[in-house]
Image (cartoon, rainbow, N blue to C red; front, top):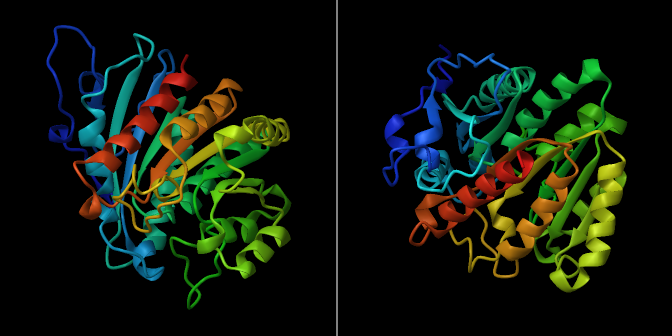
Length: 320
């Protein structure tokens, strides 16, 4: 067992009791020591937490995301289970950071994501800082490379997260910059919900130079759905597989106060879920994460509940 891994805690999953599997906590199976289930007969979800905030710390964000995975699991357990009857939910515990060694944490995440995809899991990663996206995406790239398939990354976020390294090190604001540097023309990135007030002009310049596609928050609204739908479908048509990453700070703070960088001007859950449904309907979505939940600033677990609903809804649509 790696020093950068913690086994899952069954106590994180709880909810209403019933004689049959009716809730997520009843369908979840805790697996120790990252012993990835290799049975390919039944559909399955692989949950991996990233209990890390070193990237947030390096990016001068509010600390607390380390507790994000536990809070999301706590809220997921009581959700009604509507996945196919034989679907299993495997909880593989959390990747942690030891002595600020974020890079070793990332290596373990990358290897685990690749293994989950190779064994027919739909990975759902729970953050943790958005630096998770670097490790998560690299695992998918590694999986797709032998297949010669093109990956597209869709990020619902208030920020591009295309900032340069700090003192030569990555952080929660740099994952997509690092991916662009490493993968060049294979880096296909669509960012939805960008807020001009939190992204200086230099980041828009970086977005241009890396071939990033985006929609600013003023355009990312329900009354503009036909344009949004066309842009997303065009992007989906240009790639073979999709990785979806959902930064909770993209939601308006009225719905998601418990984040590292809250904003009153984000998108609403109902609209985000419409986007999720569109992406999942193509059957190209193969992995997702939910990041930047900060329970220290949450109110009545509303952000944790929303993060859990995001994961549950996407999984339901992927397996429908």
